[in-house]
Length: 388
Length: 120
Image (cartoon, rainbow over all chains, first blue to last red; front, side, top):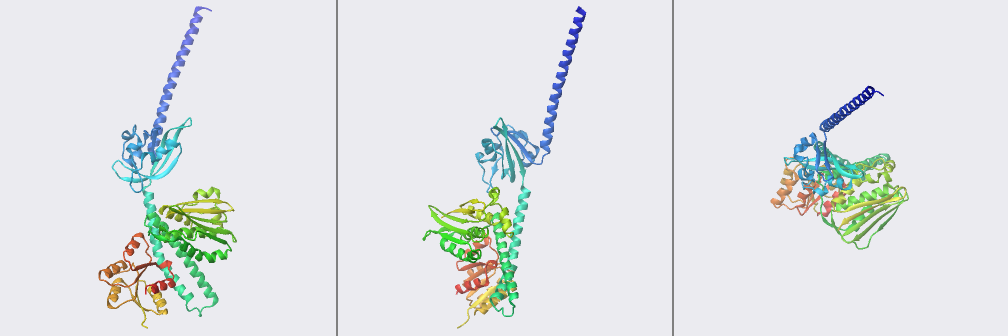
């Protein structure tokens, strides 16, 4: 091969190499620009989101704080980024007490690596407090949480609407009570007084109207109880309550329905029972709801039992039935407001889905707990534990 | 025997009318006042055996009637008959030792009659 040819090949090679290197550098430059473009796009996207988005590293130090966060909380990104979130943005509960950093959603997500959502209150830079709904998700790398992303939504408006709605229900229910009592009393007077002028059919119709007015009255009471629980205006009168006579008189009231459905009823408790410090009316509501549910959701000829036992500083109240049970997939929602299990809806279309919600709220307000076990088609046991 | 006298202080005429009928059927003498001011006037004028008192009324409400009765030492066994039932209302009523409390829409006429009898 002549030198000329060799030189030519070499030149070509160098040229190719140079070309290749040039291309590579150009591509790398392109990629860098591309990364910057992506970053700019991400930034624009984060800033255009109406919800606050912030990210932290594994120690809870803020690495990202979008425009909505600044708008909501009053801090500029540079005041927060590089600092621990819990040191800058304080969180309080409904009573205005500060939530310890270890109890905050972020700490839990970083520790357990789980996504969690809840509603709390944030304190702004200017000291004012507002309700937020927060979802915190872990950033997981090779199976380990290395940080977290929080999406924060200001729910001031929703809270206000919810409050207005509760107040409206309360007002409407109060206003309904007077005409309902008038209907009830006049019908009662007719039905228990002079009815000789009425035909049997007319009397029967009036009875049905009276029963329906009674049901309406119960529904209004239930709605009022819900709105009181939600507005925090639920009256609690602490008195010595003797559970035995209370339960007996409730059972007496339920006797006709137990008979009509041919249920066998068992009431067990020690013959002497310590009294508890509680509100009689609330204990009544708890027992009444659990027992009426048991009666209602048990096919005719079933078994219902009420068992009361004092235990240490508590009393245990168990209400069990041989009824339809609570479907496995719906167990977690059974205490939610207005939730009714599918089989309950099929059995009785009249329920409001408020009973167990009220029971749970009252039990917890009294410092107690409520749990249940249930097997579909076999029955359910509700276990209430109340302090004495 | 002289009939026992019940004073009903209630602004809703349908309510006072049926209460009056029920009580009269059961041997009571019944007087009705449409508001707190009239009610207090009647309480001062003659001795009543039982007072049935509504809370929300025009001119002078039931809370003010209770205050005024306490201030001027008018002692009558009293049953507050109302549809209020908020925490604050109940707490106000509980300050008066001789006053009972019934929710209208939860209480049948027969139970009101029973309560009036228990107050005698």
